[in-house]
Length: 131
View 1 (spheres, helix red, strand yellow):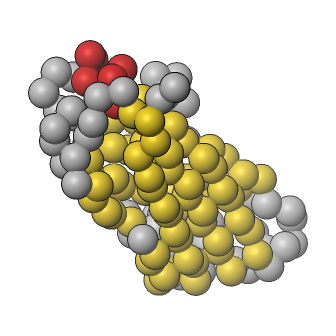
View 2 (cartoon, rainbow, N blue to C red):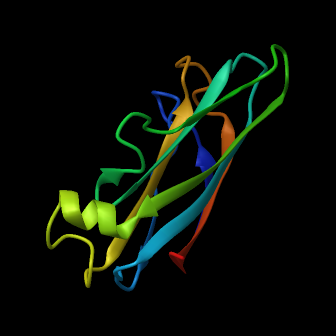
């Protein structure tokens, strides 16, 4: 999935959304997500934060933050996220195995600056069998 636009009034991207047909036991969802912002050199850091069926990828962390160099015109943050379908199903019965997996990638500038900056946000997701 790919989305390109400008950061909103809160310096956030529009959510990038996609769906995998269904969750399967003994699998994980591997999700690679990237946000690239063509900023004005004032963006200090970016966040990329995915969910599957509204649940975060880790009970402690909600996403990945990437630092941007001061004065840099471009900033990128990339993360690889693993969602264990069995663990999620155990925590939220009936919401993952045999159900569509609705993926949402959110994010943007953490500092609140960058409104109107152009961005490209992408993600790819695949279901991988656990060994």
